[in-house]
Image (cartoon, rainbow, N blue to C red; front, top):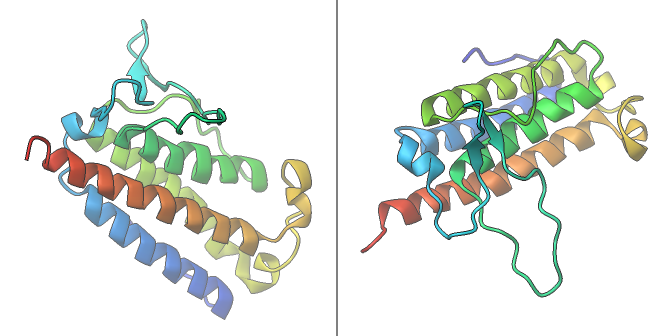
Length: 184
């Protein structure tokens, strides 16, 4: 992966933080098998599944919380989709104007290798756009986006993206640890 570069200090620091997160997450994904990728640790796990047409799609976008019921457990495939397609690709679609056709965000590769590759592509699309902003634009209101986001800065969006990556990346690491220790 070619890392985006930035010369302005705040933008450079944000890109460096993304690179540190990318390095850690993709290090944890190294050697991921299809069995781990789709492993459902509990019976009602959320995942991606093949439809009648053979195309894998996410089973449920964002589960609605139900009082008194624990949040659903998700698979590694679902978490990788969440980081790549729902978050990073979604941010490119909603908050940038130069968006190419990025395909159906509900579809996701059914293999670990292709899923990690898709995540890498979504990551690069997002970080390249952030790097190109420069500090002045990074710190100014975006002017685009759903809800009240148009009044927020790209820095706030970027920090939100880093929280998503750290949160779900940690869950991916834990799921891998649990998968490797099944039956121990």
